[in-house]
Image 1 (cartoon, rainbow, N blue to C red):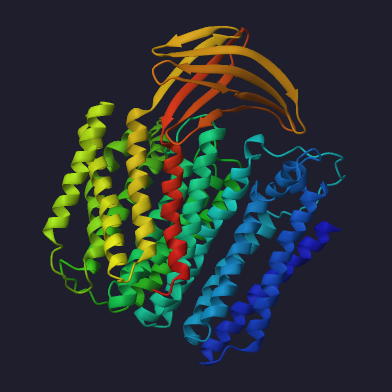
Image 2: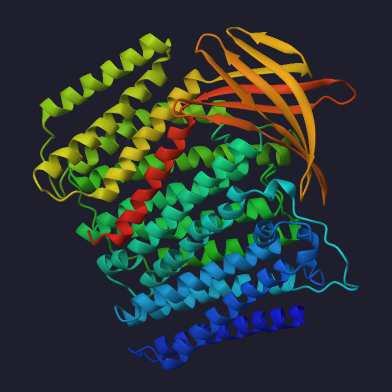
Length: 625
């Protein structure tokens, strides 16, 4: 019953999407300057069918309808309700249906809010967006159907991957998809702007909020995923340059550049072609990341669903998308103004863009290079943190300084900023860095320069905010929060990197180990039977004689039956100053347990700074200026 209903809804979605493309194209050919009611009705039916199909799949997971293959493979009656629901997008089929839902939602909302501004532009956007939707719907129903029926109906399901059974990872994919897939609407709008010869300023106004919305959700998705990896995977860090992490970071660089460039197009009507290119490559990079992950080309602990045949479809679809969008761009290239004064806000924003493109190229090369070495030389290599740190870290220094100075520069032409405040902030940054280096014994040149430049950004942002507040001048809260948050983020990341401590040791129950000024005591083990798994819980005392604290930590080894899996849950003691982090795993055939113990300074502040940075985009969405 559910299978038939779900397939009817998907077919209804395909029919309504096709009709939208046909009717909108006919309106363009007829040069009609009004949106026909038939298009509005079809759009309403489309979003109704698509959302209904997704709600139906959620219903199937909640009530464990194992007649659906997707439910059978990714759920179990013993799963808590929260993880039954998150199991909907914890697999390939369900996540692709979520992808389509977001594409349709953005298409519908963009159409509703923009159809009265520029009818031809709106119709072209509708055509392009729904061609994309149609492509993914065909892929869904032909190769990734979440309503595929299995006979005979199994009594019980196989269960959801235990690593996915976590609150942070349950909300991570929807947030990330709102960023990834949300970029499709300004891809479509960019193609539409070229085809309709739309005015640059109008195009900027039409996509501005959508860029900020997708950037904010992409940022939040990356942050939540990073938090999950920190406490769930037992790696003990906030970023590992894992290939799948990188696949989510690459579109973020594009979005960040676009969010800044679109301001230049709006205010000065400059950089139109550059904004169009960024709009195109943002969604292209999102689909590229999806192809790399779904095809199984990228190997990662994050890769939970891959199939080469599915990857081939996405590759063909991606190639056609790139081919046609750039043929249209180069064939009907829009005349652009590009007359920038060296000392102007436009120039500083463009410099921000080039920094973003450098970071994007670095991450892309580091992610793709191992694939080429495997194909060409049959050699397995991995590109890890040392490569990224050495290439990216030095370039952060001028980037942070430009971020601090840029907001003070005026449009068109500006004088140099006042030297005295600039000098005072530099001196303060150097003094703070000196005290950090002196008391905490950190003398790495690049690290200290990054600390100084991040402090410069923080102090400059605070100084601008205070001076504008006192003079009742306009305060750009979005820019203030994002720049301040990013300054704090880099500052705390560097301190965390320089002053983290990590110890790896083997220990038996009842044994005590001394490491420098610290003592680790393994008190005992206990086993608990829980609803979804059995837990082997360690009881440890961590005593630091130098810092004068005693902490009790309880890491776990979880044993899942459906499917049969072991996971290693970290125990973390968090305070404002640091995290004390402990994981344990049994050494087969012995009484010893391997313990990874870490002291991670300022972890809480890293998460706070990241959320502060992401908040800037949402603030700008709801502010008029």
